[in-house]
Length: 84
Image 1 (spheres, rainbow, N blue to C red):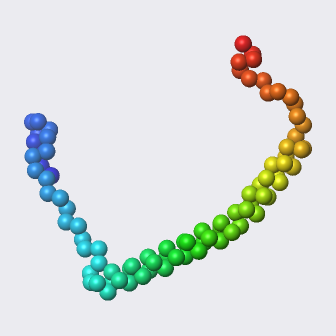
Image 2 (cartoon, rainbow, N blue to C red):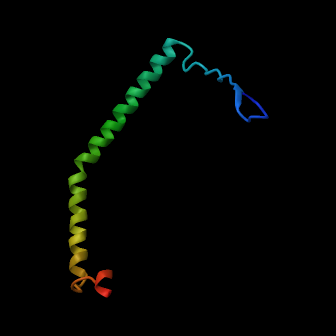
């Protein structure tokens, strides 16, 4: 990159050379297979999480109900508007 000192603007620029992602087709095919297996693994984990999502939501709901029963109702909350 060349910059003109007087105008402080770029005069010339050469982009860096990007290295090859893969050296040969076999290495690229191997990487694709690894990516496929990783994607399948993530999908399986997501499916397991969805199977148990209903149970988790039910537990959270029961905990919220329990907390609501333990906390006394103090009536209507005071808003900033009410204090004016």
